[in-house]
Image: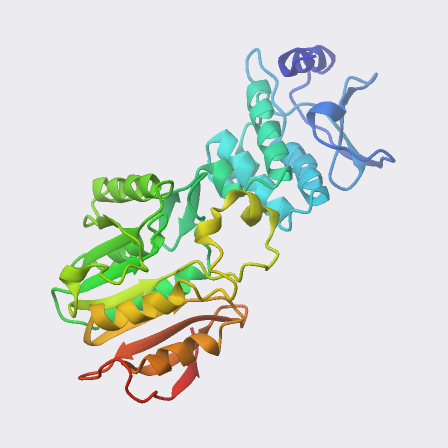
Length: 370
């Protein structure tokens, strides 16, 4: 029976505008809300929720000609479904999906009138897709990053919260520099770092470099959206960051160079969302995870002006080796290892030495906070 028909059937049994809710224990687990609604002889409607209880009640806030189902009930059922599928933040993600379908902020779910039949169908379909481990950001169509929301989907790497630390570090460095600054974002993907820099440092020239034909449309779309919103335009360059001649016209002129490269070692087992939905070329960095980081360090030494700064995100197993690569290059000083909010090694930073040439003696490096 279609959702609309089911709702009509329940409506005929429940013509009450005031809700009365009680809990009794249920021995039957539930997969989702739609398949476990059971009209009752007392005129109420029973729902099996996330805790295996039966919620007995009458539809709340009926709209003229249309019965609605409370978000709390739908979210509870979805939470159980997502948790059973191994989704770690099941409740939070169920609420985000519900808010997305209802077209309101997550914090206002409790004030919503409820789901119509069509909205329940959409919600149920999204919960099924998330249970199959499709990324939440793909389902919502956006990923939050610092003060922005970026469009994401198949073909582009979903920006992670830990990368906000690298972006924030780069923005702070940019604030300390005089006017006419140039910031380069290598392996830009969705444009998260580049567009955050442009948003928070409006007087800066920002160049975003990406080679993937699948990711570039997302980068250009986000750049156009931010420019339309009033942010300074970001220059998008289609290029391979391992190219020895990358950005030749900027040699010795870059103030801040940031890079979130593919860095996961090839044989590392990653979560299903990453394995099946993030592009492999944006995740894996060769057998040791350093296949892109090595040439980026080499090219950064040429692009940065003396005193310019470099920040590179890396795998949590690279907390020693990446600073060592920077030191071995010979053109960097003030090499610092940074940890993420979970205390794991996450990115390394360095300053381009004044007058240093490639191959001079390595400098020491230190650890620092994010």
